[in-house]
Image (cartoon, rainbow, N blue to C red; front, side, top):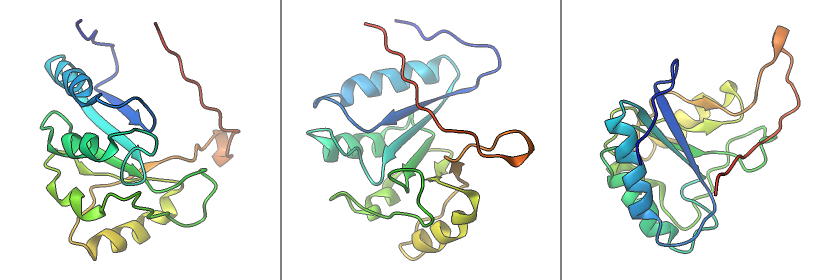
Amino acid sequence: CEIKKFDGYNGLSFDIEEGDGQLLESFQNAFKKCKIAGYKVIVTVSHSLPYNVPDAVSLMQGIIADTNVDILSPQLYTTGTETSNDYTDNTFSWNEYKNFKGSGGIVPSIVTSSLYSDAEDYFKKISINLNGYIQWSQIGPSGSVPPTTTTMTTTG
């Protein structure tokens, strides 16, 4: 299976939250194929690790160690309506993130940009430097916040 290069895109994001166990090798193969195709690879997970994966700890350890992952983006929210960051660690210590070696670093997903300085302070206390953020809340025309919908398309 080859990865097609799409005009105007230079990266792919893997949002890993729920799934079957024993998926690490499959994800690693996908990450590698993305890198071979010239893409940057972002992995985002719910809080410190996927919340509904039977072997989430070993999956997360494998993702952290994978040199094909450029950016690791823990989601510091649950619903997307939070007014403060949620540092739930889901039985996987944030200290494990110190082992991540991706070229783009740790870039948390936060609800709004106003929560970034809090995230920087939190992670700095455990010797983790952040490298920017991904904002979950969408901003529409003229600064309005449009309704949020999530669409997932799968192929079987």
